[in-house]
Structures are given as structure tokens and as C-alpha cells.
Length: 101
Image (cartoon, rainbow, N blue to C red; front, side, top):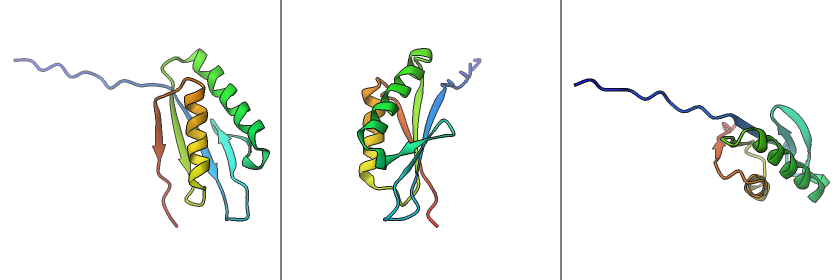
């Protein structure tokens, strides 16, 4: 009996990297490898983020989101990033762990 091996599915991935040096520093947001802004911008940052994700998703309906946060990033910022993906219609979101120092 022949076994047919199915090739893995590949989906385009939109990665958001969240970096924070320490408690007194704002979190820097990078989208698809480019600096996007800082959380100190408040809601303006998240509105731009949501609009950008929605625009990419329109071109790639099978898009997968990925959040890569440094250990210093606050939990609420990670959740806000996830909320932005979901509000843009992207519900397949993965998390990449960052090695602790």
C-alpha cells in the first residue's frame, strides 16, 4: 500500500517584534522587520498597526501573524498587539519565544 505524504502548507507570515530595554523605556514596535513606532505614541500607534495589518491581509488572505516579544515587554503590550491582529481580521496568530538572558 502506497502512503502519500502531503507537503506542509506554507502561509505568509507577518511578524511584529516588540523590544524594550528596561522598565523606564518605551517598547519599540517593528513590523515586518522595519521600525514601526513606540508604545509611547498610544492609540495612534495601534490604529496604524491595525490598518497596516488589515492592508496586508487584504493582499494575502492566508496571512499568519507572529508576535516576538523580548522578555522585558509588558504582558499588556503583547495582548494589545494580539488585539490589533484580531481587530484587523487576522485570527491565526503565533507567538515566538525570546530567549531569556
